[in-house]
View 1 (cartoon, helix red, strand yellow):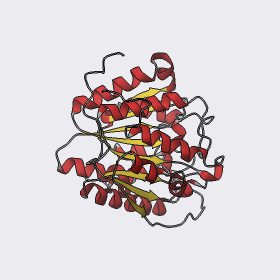
View 2 (cartoon, helix red, strand yellow):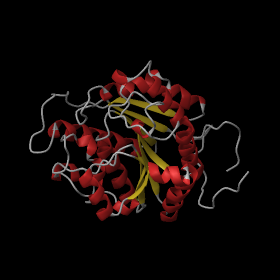
View 3 (cartoon, rainbow, N blue to C red):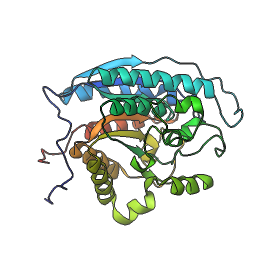
Length: 322
């Protein structure tokens, strides 16, 4: 077996004495273009997320769902679609994740659309700032999510969260965090990207985001890409927030998503990605978003998500020494 990379730390433990996981449902699809992601938290529960993590030895506290406005299904206004509703949901997610962190839990936000990560990362960034702890974000997604209301073709805020985290967006969204930007753009690592709008391409280069798109993964492989990302994160010595959009995975494997894009990571590539995050010992918080049961086949995508989260939290094929 090859030697483990030197950047790996002790992974999040499972079994007796393991840190408690806090599950937080956020059933919103107000920032998405396709309805149905609001059903995602319950689909993940139906797929057995809590019981699976409990069997792994974790303490699990399911906080239930945060509340927010219903989807008004209105067109965009001034480049924003459902802005007030999105803001309310992001605020609710932020407050719930902050409570989970204050209780010394590892928060797992169950979405819902990807705009909710503005709220979860806002809470994590404030938590890290109070502890004077560096924060890195690993964004697993088919899309760069770096639009603004001026560049977005749709006005859907689930295509804008990375831009907001890096300081570009509506003042009310930026104010959800402790500072602007919430996260240094150089500490945002994107993996699996394969759908980027033309203006986004230029803005991403200008802001210095670290992106391992699918061409790069094809060229160097998932293991090398993850080693590069995790090695860079480990050098900061801080908290890693993983924001996992199910459309990261190829739609042949994960069909129940609102914005599928062909050519994503395979089942095994996604598993390896999650296993390596766990082995690194860097995980501090997690989003699992954009599961859309209305577009799924027999809850297949939620079941996949549960399996991948289990790998992220330490399930292996065989006992491994890392």
